[in-house]
Length: 382
Image (cartoon, rainbow, N blue to C red; front, top):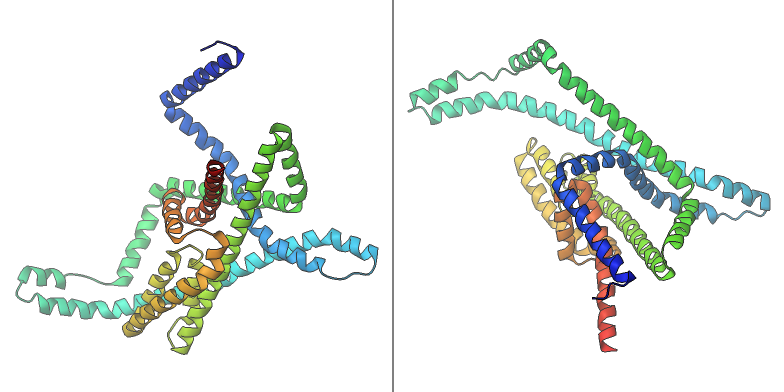
């Protein structure tokens, strides 16, 4: 091989890359700690970008409605153009907080009442269970003796817990302080992320223009066009997925509320809101709502709980075959098998957030891979 200038650069590049890779592998623990430290610094800004992306969807829709208002004077148009962004931003934030407030206001009180009713029903049922166990194991003296000595005094248990909390205050003080610091740090990080999201929303056009200038200065025109194309595809896919997923969750929750009200099942509003909220998690979310709903109804009437599970399976078929393909499926353009794969991988790596992010992410990768394959086939045929 000729040792010309280009070949020397390639050899030096390979050597440098190899040395860096060896240094990283030999100091993997230290590098991992350093990366975690950097991730902790940038995490609020990543969360802020995600918040801005979500808020931008309703904000853009509200802005379009304001732009449709006909104003005859130029001064009026200037005033509208000046106030439309902050007004749309405030309305979008209020809309999100209103939805969260409705969910919390409906779910939390009902769950509190249900927990109290479960405690009361257990207090009444446990003595009966104890008698049944004594009759069942009447031939086993040791077991019967043990069952009779069991004490299900709930008040005594609560007093024991209170005594432990009081006497063990010194031992748990350090844990309480560390937990408090974690909460404070979490609140501060969310506050920084929220402020950062507001800056992004208020200056998104300027940020977009500056980003385009930066990549234009660094890369060639062909690469710039490819980057902009991928960014545009990603934005459309993610925004359509979020919009479709929210709409699908609302439809599913409304279906449960209406059908449960028709059949006079208990907790219709609570279960409807709960399933709508958990249905935001693709594939598995609605089943979480079904489990909680069935458990709540079971405390009231076991037969109604069985009927609720049957109703859930029927509505899931309707939603999966009619609603989801038209509302969400077409928005991401990802086959069902890859949706399941994306949810599984995302859930393993990032939990619930990964389930939400990896479906549109895989959709973008799927579209890019399909485009590359079609291009390669076209080149070979030509």
